Length: 140
Image 1 (cartoon, rainbow, N blue to C red):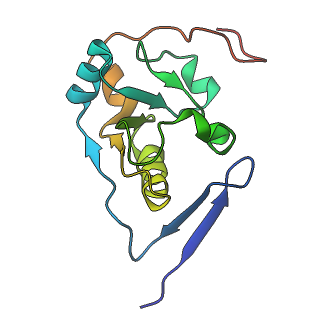
Image 2 (cartoon, rainbow, N blue to C red):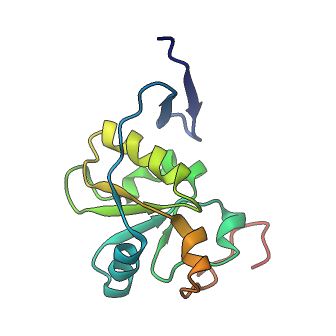
């Protein structure tokens, strides 16, 4: 079987996403309800990896905003591998599941993605807030 691999280097070049169309390890996930509960109780870090323009539409209160394009530069802000569990969320789970797969490969067995993402969060009418600070060149 022929395998096609796509490599995408994120800003800074230290975090590579390797996606294989033939074999892809299943990343661990939590459901949306558990993610909301974790945020409400402040019991777990939730990292929103959507880009700044997506954050401007609203974010889950308490989520840490770390656009996917900045992860390689800001990876030190994540809990150390194999320590405190944390969640990664994007809009639909496509990006967050890929990021968690890569983090897992780097030893971050404490990372999981949120199944459903912020699009499902919004569809359920759950509370969203404006980002705490407006990203450069954006009107929030």
